[in-house]
Length: 147
Length: 255
Image (cartoon, rainbow over all chains, first blue to last red):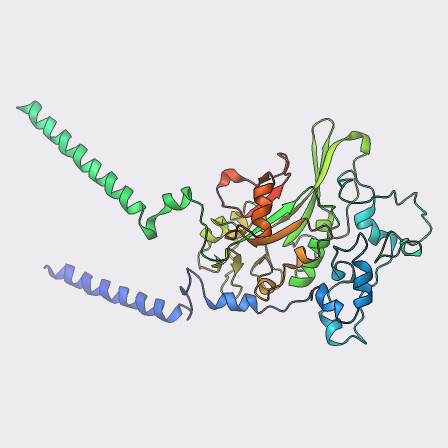
């Protein structure tokens, strides 16, 4: 083998070894465990705290409201859909109170007349004409809206 | 004599060419090089394999999904960062299409087109399609975004270099750069909730149960039954992204 090639070969081997050493040092521990990513990232994403606790949790203390709601047309709606996330409230129920939205605008999010809403999917009202001075909750019980 | 020699070289050329093409085809079917098979087949995953179903007929455009998603996942409050949002499509009598999404639908929708001019109108909730052949995952240069073994597309935010390539690659516009972390952020299908046995926040708080998720490999799951019993369609099927978000009653005007 000519001397030029030998020298080039040595240089090549050195460069490849440096690359392999750097790759070994810089690849994170769990990389490639399941695929081309850090396996531990799955646990890190899964460890994120939850904020919406689910309606089953509400039943433990507010069973009468949950039961009353179960008979009306709002029975399929989760408590936190209107009242907001309950993660602080379940830790400290006395000081951390949840929202009790009762404005016309809030009910209008679902019940205002809009051509885009299917008439089969939801009861709709013209909120500009239907008792414009009053809050909806003065006549309708939000947990049992038909009464 | 000269003619025979030419014939022989043509024969050997064809032989070599045939062998090369054959070898190329065989290697293209082997694991690290199987791009053709990958493109032609639909990955199914082993075990639980999450899919999503959204019923447009049931969506009333309340914006609860967009609102709860922002709360649950600490999405920045600015009206242009969303992991989940709702669009209001209005097709006018003259054929023009108006798409609106004020603050992603969080503050509710009003119809800006007078009723007389409307041909039809509907809401389209949008979120990450959790594609089985995600373009966003394929372009990531460092392996910071990936499909989990359950078929959920996730981001490793400690490993992301914020190059924005995946934001460009997603055909559904489901990614954004987090303004303070400077890394990409996207819907995780509430992976942290799924792992605790809870539903994703947007589905938990949908008042009409217009959106559901579940195991596509389980024929008895709610999602599998939805796909079996309804005329479902995915967004941009021609892009072969392997989208796992199935819409019922999706109009052809939706992009």
